[in-house]
Length: 127
Image (cartoon, rainbow, N blue to C red; front, side, top):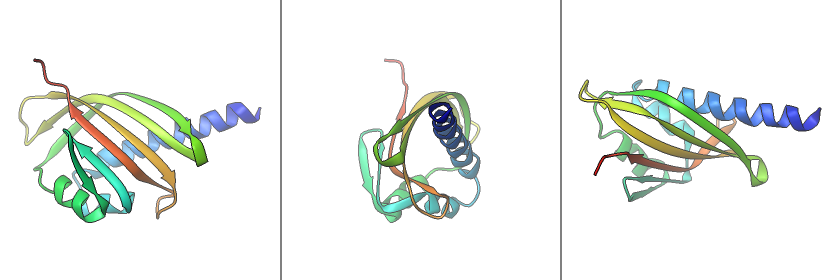
């Protein structure tokens, strides 16, 4: 069944990409940059960063971050793209765990086969 195969593919690719992103986060951060391009945009808590260099400067500004993925929801988009919605908990430098959500819009291309075209990140703070 071709539809089932296509659905498995985008689910598998999206889930593996998200797991790879968070497992790479605490390696030297330069390794994350192959997952972005100069067309990539990161919106982090409402602030926008465009292109690999600005994104690297933002992501490189954190200490050690531990991500614990709670859920990953994946959908296909136009032009063989993939949308991944992630929720979970994170702690920075061993501090208190905070809830977060992050959305990745993946496009085909780049060294890994897909790259992050859009990344939107929010902490879920009570309040």
